[in-house]
Length: 252
Ligand code: 13P
Image 1 (cartoon, rainbow, N blue to C red):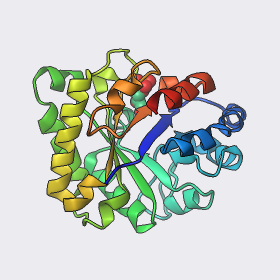
Image 2 (image 1 turned 135 degrees about the horizontal axis):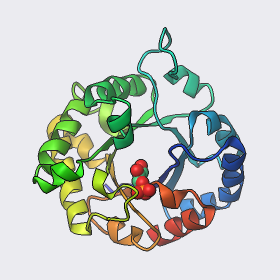
Image 3 (image 1 turned 180 degrees about the horizontal axis):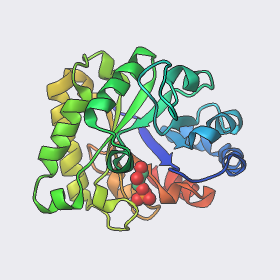
Image 4 (image 1 turned 90 degrees about the horizontal axis):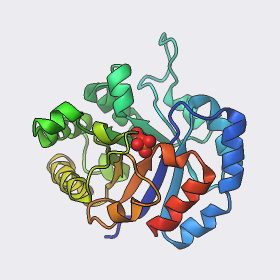
């Protein structure tokens, strides 16, 4: 079964609401183009820009949050819950990004609780995994990534996992311009699919695996030509409508 391609922009801590609105409006015409090319398009603004982006973006544009809490409500200062996101029509959440793992103590165990809560709410978790430069240089990529996948998906059934999306983002390639080669991307994404099979059986063939890390309009096509890479999670190059448009056109 063919998996639909996915282009997801992760805006990180960029764009005010006014800037997000400007992008959403400018990106509206891309929806038709994406649909014709069987590509799903998305962006992940900050919490504060989610409502504005959702309001002005094309209906088919995925608008994802960059995090969520696993509890519905309670004494968790500074956190945002899943029902709060749902209220604004937000159905996708990025989890386990390496920046959150590095600076905010986001662990695979915490991601597991969030993934389960999202699935219980019929939402789509986009779960990020990836090794650091030291781990890469020590030849520990598969050990690290395998553990992140197994812990993140612990206790999920085949049915639970059918809408999950996984992103492989080697930490050493994020924002550095040092791309992982397509050979590395394919090898690790294939390995991730093997681990997914172990964890959630046949759903592994439906799960989209994205590559992320210095993806640009010039290199996106090469990644997408890898059999186990179904899309891209893009930081810097997703911020300007011009390069986002080029990413879409080059993915096709
Ligand atoms: P860059 O595309 O800026 O390297 O960021 C990748 C990333 O972290 C996306 O989540």
